[in-house]
Amino acid sequence: MSRRRATALVGTLGLVGALVAVIPATAGESPAERAATRAPQWTACPKDVVVPPTVTLPVQCATVPVPLDYQDPDGARIELMVSRIASTKPEKRRGVLMFNPGGPGGTGLDQPAFLVSKGLPTGVTDAYDLIGMDTRGVGHSSPVSCGFTADDAYWANIPPYAPDDAAVVRQADIARDVAERCAAHDTEDRLRHLTTANMARDLDRIRAALGEEKASFYGASYGSALGAAYTSMFPATTDRVVLDSIVGDTHLDRAGLRRFALGMEQTFPDFAAWAAKRHESYGLGRTPQQVRRTYLTIAERLDKTPAPDGLTGAVLRQITFGSLYNQIQYPSLARIWQTYLNPGEAPRAKAATAANPQDNALTVFLAVTCNDVAWPEDVDTYRRAVAQDRKRFPLFGAASANITPCAFWKHEPTQPPVAVNDEGPRNVLILQNRHDPVTPFAGGRLLRETFDARSRLVTVDGSGHGVYVLGGNACALNLTTSYLVDGTMPAGDRACRRG
Image 1 (cartoon, rainbow, N blue to C red):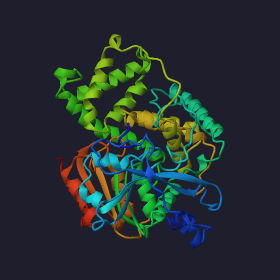
Image 2: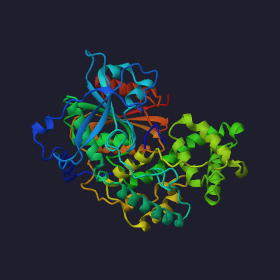
Image 3: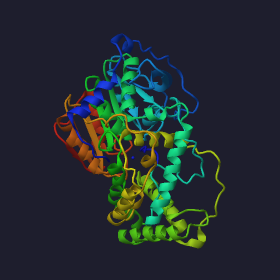
Image 4: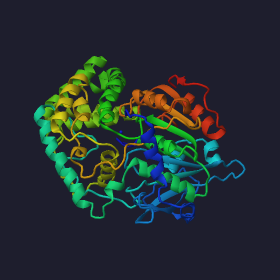
């Protein structure tokens, strides 16, 4: 999931896994073939690439061809679209800084301009050409589709909350239908090539196409997993790497998905304390404990009787989970709760539209998640997990443990997940809030441990999803900017107070 849109992982290391991850990156290609990648031809970006009016630096776009299948480098190719905000200070320019905003499936062509508009320091824009991109399968980069529509039962990255065992069984039928539909729509056989490892290989192809010996990288949320894979597979050609809001490994697996529930339990008290201080305005409870009971009361009532507009307890939980990404969303969340606090006052249903604007993003999310690692195929495995997590994490556990289409996915993983490579330069700066609903602090600690001496961890006593620039923490902002601009890596792990 993206940090701007409302995905904590455990992995294993091993020499065999590391070799499998690295060798196929260039297998079958001669140095001449690898060097033949043509230089991008920069032109105006498509009209849907958003450039905020406050951004005065030119934004250009170009395409880079890459193999659809890196095991068949001379076979079919796909086009990746990248964007650029070029440094205007050649005397200060260090190289290129590539971005990934999360997902998998989130568009990234607008990421450089977005961060500039939010206050990306000029030291960074002077030192680097800022490179955004739609990763393979996304947006303008040979997009894929499962054909989702707005009224589909499966409409979000996380399966819905299962209030009882029967709900897991019903969700299994929906998940199977989704997997079969994705397979039926995959007429060009592209979905199986959507993997984190291939996206990391794409990053190195983009670096080479840009004529750079090394590339720096900033990735947030799932972008932290992609960045971890990228610098693990290509330690010699990655420069300064910043990973923000940490998934915990190089892929999203079932354990990582279940940790969403831990993140919500750790972050929800921040909203509850906020709402309790505003009880006279919103009426959700005078103490954080009362606010928590209000949430469970509304959700459980909607589990049994959906609101007149069709809102269910599962959807309310998803809305609440997503609203914990940023404290700026707290007032809107409080108002939504108010709306459904009294059953008779809920709004009436609105007609659904036929198209689903999230079709492409959701398709890529599923393909990458399902292709990266093998998922259990036995429905009873998920039934047991949901029952366990419903008790352990009452706020959201029965959602994040629920069954996904990965249990019925057509393609098996073609290789093990990329193993974190702890041998290489000390060039990985890890940023992590203590309270994060989707990538909890455990993910940051995990990645710090596996990268070992290659990394440093900056822990922020903050709440929400995202640290650098968007998080608003002065300490983390300064440490990260100093690293990107001057190469100053903290001597040890750092802890930043709020503010």
